[in-house]
Amino acid sequence: MKKNKIFVTSLLLGVMVISAACGNSSEKTSDQNRSEVNKESSENSSSSEISTAITNPVVSENSDVNDDNEDSKKLLSQYSSEQIEYARVWLQLGPNQEIDELNVRKISAGVPINPDDETSANYPEDVIQLAGSRLVDGSVTYSGNGDGTINVYNVPLRWDGNYPAGEDFYKDIIENTKQVSIEPGNDEKIIALIKLQIVHQ
Image 1 (cartoon, one colour):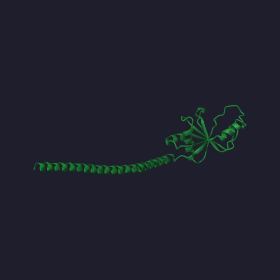
Image 2 (tube, rainbow, N blue to C red):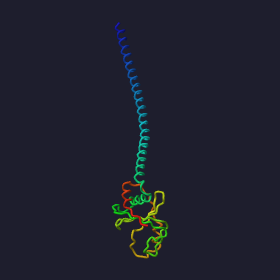
Image 3 (cartoon, one colour):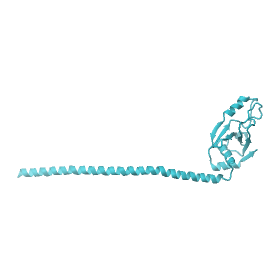
Image 4 (cartoon, rainbow, N blue to C red):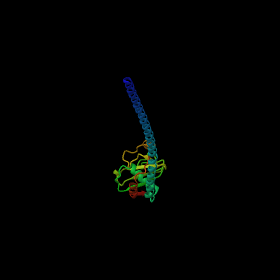
């Protein structure tokens, strides 16, 4: 009888231990399943967020850019493309932005680079010279390429020096023009510079 009680008690303890172990195992399995489901849904939602982040900003940025372009066209529509070009070139390359006037001189191909020097070479193409009203304002002499770039000639507004400088000196200026891409710039600054323009023929 005593042996039967001990056996039954041992058996019950064994069954309890086994069922407890099985319960933990199924909890672990269900925890793992839950964890994998959460991980998958988190991956899906993060993948969806990345996709949204890639497409939405592009759309909104493009629409902002389009709005800016439309506003810019409206602001500048009353001015000629030449006026806008002169202002943009000066805004980007002008040595002094604090000017009281922007003088525009159109120089034809064949005109001497330095009229005071008999050895001067001639401009090989039509150029534009932009300058303020004072020497300190500096100048920009360039030809346009019609594609948003210009060729900048390294010539001063007024020539000082010993003449004759020699043909090689001027040939070097012609051969070493610098190509520059002109940025659209700030519309308000462009308009302010257009209002200062005085075109000399």
